Length: 325
Image (cartoon, rainbow, N blue to C red; front, side, top):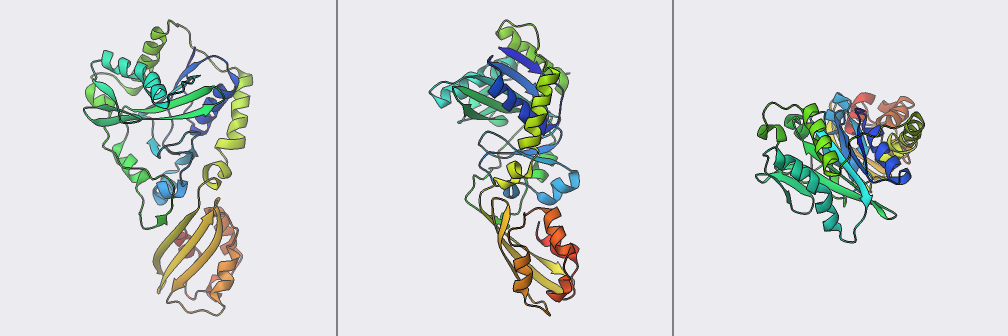
């Protein structure tokens, strides 16, 4: 087994590194890593439905789709992610327990009474500190999980908070869980010290002493995976399931509602409703957004090429843009 404890906090890189190791390195692997503030969504989730779009835009947070299933999670530098890559067992539950066992033991050794709970969580005194998920590739399994050490709970709640009336879809929904931070149960240990402790503990369990470092050649291959998958709009948003979006607001003196039907990230149908006056039929405006990506820069391009007041009198482009996200 190889052990990786790197300091790159770019979530695109970190997920690409997981994929690279899974597909290209024969040895089993244990890896620890942290992400700058971001949202990680499950493989089958509607990314737009899981986040507070206005808040993450304001904070400049990345949204990254994982290889694994499960719910949306908030990461910041107070969270540690761990990854095990190894041979798979036929029993899925057995895999979850096998790969979380060293983490539980590492916490127990510090006097923290962590335990496995439910189908994929680690808890302390009934409060969640870790969510886990898995992805299968040939005869291997990628198991990864979070370790909430000193995460900003305020940021977590703001980033994942969303108006449930805005989105209606059949995708997996994240469920608010009672969570806590590990550092509440430890004295005189910061997140970096804890990260280094965990990797040292697991290495001793396997009788290893040296860390593995990616070569320049490997880093270039990982960057290629970032470029082709994890940083792309298609992967992070285009693979979202179908969803309907609806939002109502005041635009000038008008009350306007916009409804969107989105599939694979593209607007398939759009409807404006409201008490506005017009010169041209609103259907002409709705048609201009058909097959446009439901992404701000693409919607903005459409708005910049039309005279919006011909369709909805007394509004500004920025007001319509605000309604669509």
